[in-house]
Length: 131
Image (cartoon, rainbow, N blue to C red):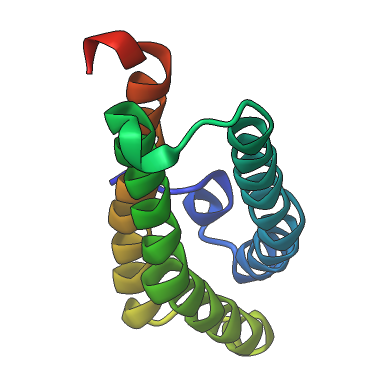
């Protein structure tokens, strides 16, 4: 899997700094963006008087979006917390443990899954009549 720019430096201080920034930006942008997309989408459905269960494209889109959120909550957030904790530790003593790299690979794999699920949801939102 592709390593992050900070990881490629193999510099513990750079990696620890990047881990802190990723954690902060995920809370602001990822969580905030998810909330905005979900709330505005549901509000739009409500304002138009659409019943979600009668529209297969909405059911699929919402299910895939929810699955992506489940991957984030159940897998990616705990992995990211572990990565950040490890990075704080090795930033001080300079030794990057093998466990960090294993967790990075897991995060990359599950991150790809969590990204592809909303892309699939986007398909149903755009091509709704074909679904």
